[in-house]
Length: 426
Image 1 (cartoon, rainbow, N blue to C red):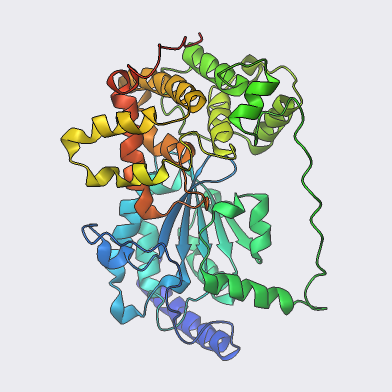
Image 2: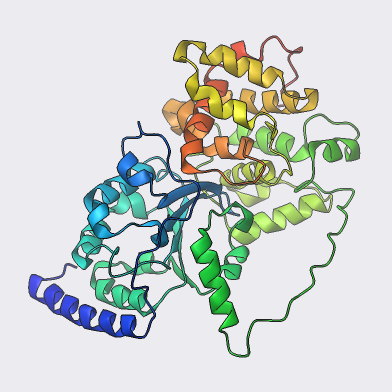
């Protein structure tokens, strides 16, 4: 269904009146907020540097269900005369094009949108039309944080354009704390202005702020724990096995059943099912992936295991070296990657080698499964390395993905000399 010009103009007039009322009530900011995120793009060679430098858009790894997480912060938008909104739309598409073939999630921080920096209603209509099925089909959730009447008005205006299926993906989040149920909250890049606004909202709740709740001390891990504990812990509790059981079992199953599955590692699985399997693993109970009849289940479990390691597989110590890879001439990058991985602790090196050998094997079937080294790198890069503060900015993804792609594509020369080849379990 499309909107006629007369209908849209009438709705726009009503929208303007409602917006004025909302601004008078103080529900929308009258002045744009200065960008407060420290992760704005610093690379002046970026094709959309003029937009990216404001830090409006961030990609921060995966959510709790293995889906790429993309954040849009309204408070980072400068006044409209300082931002080309057509370029903003192109930048949005340029960024999403790197991830839309996989399942992904969007978090939209609404606070800070004002009459001075918001795009026109016609721009919003055109933007929705620009984002065709390619962008919508793999969007699994759109979290709108701190919604106001403005958002609800927009939603009502656009209902004739929005499919029922897409509408079910919209989730309103009134307070940041609610995001913890769905996302790795510590990985979120949240502007300081949004944090302060959330605090004001909580204080303004009826009865004042909620009473402070003492966080109980963390429980020691179970002897059978597999998720959220270190490689060393897993090795000690599993008779010295070098390859963690979760990795061994998921890799073995996918090798036997999923190498030719199109889009392997690009799809998510039912959230509760993944949680149930994690619980079984942590309790030391046997897992049989055959019973789930879905090769994407072990694929998500493997990514989840890597993401929940207390320290990434490539370690915190090597993160800066990986980020510096783009400063190295292309012809020298493979040898630089080799030196980087050879500096890993012995156990990490063996596990990385095991995993990359498997991913190299997956890439060999890319004609069928569509998972080239580049595609695999986009999925696994953020699960192999992250900074100590556990937040990866949009700028940091490029060197991380290049590094991971080189590991997969040039597996043999990079891993050939450090130690004897380990047995890749069937």
